[in-house]
Length: 152
Image (cartoon, rainbow, N blue to C red):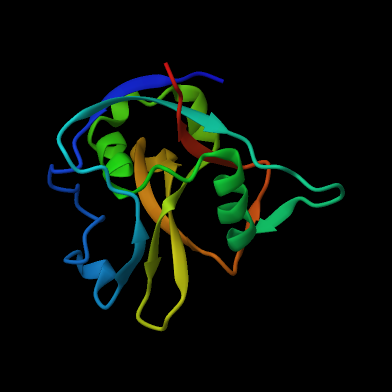
């Protein structure tokens, strides 16, 4: 699986769609987020597959969040997704087949549902877009990947 390098600045403004001020997130709040304050950091992004139990094609988001912690892939959140969206031309083309998961940021919507941030390739507009999937919802094991930081 390919990887790519990008500079992430947790102090930079978030791209549209990743702030509570976004009209589509009105009434939402951040339950937890991984932030690394202190200026810009160079990161090499990679992907990790999900641990697939025998005879299961889907996993609940809460199970995926726990898997991410076990795999060490729960350390990337909103500032990382924002940097990827801002410089999305750097994201490898091969990643377009997956929904990219960021279990380091969890939002709570207006009715109390916890949601994981994800990025997905939107073919008609030929760009990456952000989305949210509920922790109580099923995720396709084959179609999702955890975004992680590759150590140098």
